[in-house]
Length: 208
Ligand code: PRP
Ligand code: MG
Image (cartoon, rainbow, N blue to C red):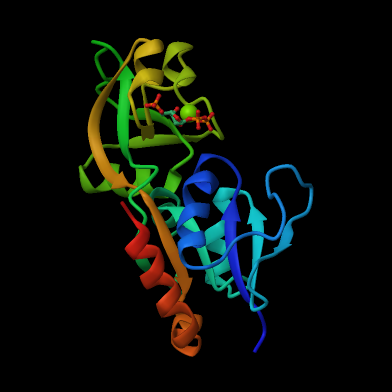
């Protein structure tokens, strides 16, 4: 059988994920963080790691280019891909997707301008709540948008709330809770069940 490909992304999530993989007997054969390589051998012959941008992990897994990966539920829900199975909540990177705006600022009576990188989840949320919106796609620093008159509201991740507070913004409505999830390709979950299930069980047992 071809090696099992596990999609990871650099950053804090990687630091939190590697100990769980280690508990399942899988460690990178070299240091991931100070390498420009994107594909890595592991201590198991039948397992390789690939290192991607976090936002790309669901795509690689959904299309079967990786069999397993780690991604935030916010990204998984935003991308709304078929063929993903979520076998395990890793209970790290816990955060909320929320609407937020300038403290005390009234909302416009007409169409609300909303800046976000979560176009799909924002569209769904405002449709569900019957609010007319114009969505403005941004790639980061959403908190800036209401401060300079680009938007009336933002939809973004809130963790500690420090970024909102530092910019004079207030959290408003909760859209969803998120945390890091193990994502598996649905077909691979069936065809490689004997290989994947024990790995997921061992990672689950290592969760604090
Ligand atoms: C994330 C998120 C919020 C902030 C939330 O941004 O988009 O801005 O962290 O964390 P807090 O509630 O603890 O302040 P990030 O720093 O990842 O940058 P980006 O939005 O520009 O990608
Ligand atoms: Mg941000």
